[in-house]
Length: 191
Image (tube, rainbow, N blue to C red):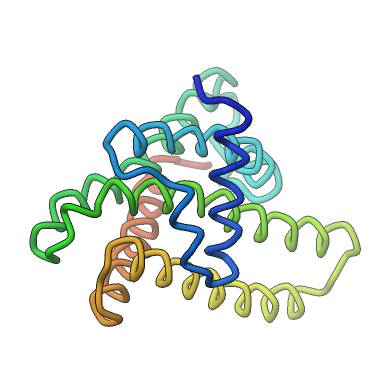
């Protein structure tokens, strides 16, 4: 079990990284156990995922039992958190950063809390005030650019990569996420 102090320290570090301050990396350990513990971030993001699913989720076929939907979405969520780290584990020797992988993964997972909170905060605010779709799209695009830069910063400094390979890591993360969404959306056969 992770303590509140550890969560606070990790989120503080992720917050510093969100301000493009590489001192935020000091909040994260370098061992496999540190990376494994960083998956507690998944539990913090989970309520945001549920809210997103309720607002925008893919409709399941009518009559699908709630338990089946909940199990499917839980598996989609958990596997979605695991695919990129698994792919990057195998790619890290090619990039020459295997020795920094666990440190990066710790920072990456906790940064996901900040990224999701920012997106969810913006989306809920616009939803509550009834902002037009054009405004949502415009500010969503600005926020996406920021989140991509944030991810690049974490990859660059967490993995100790040059700017170009760090872009590759962010692009890989994005491609994997989109591919996973296409696969899982295709599994839902709506009437």
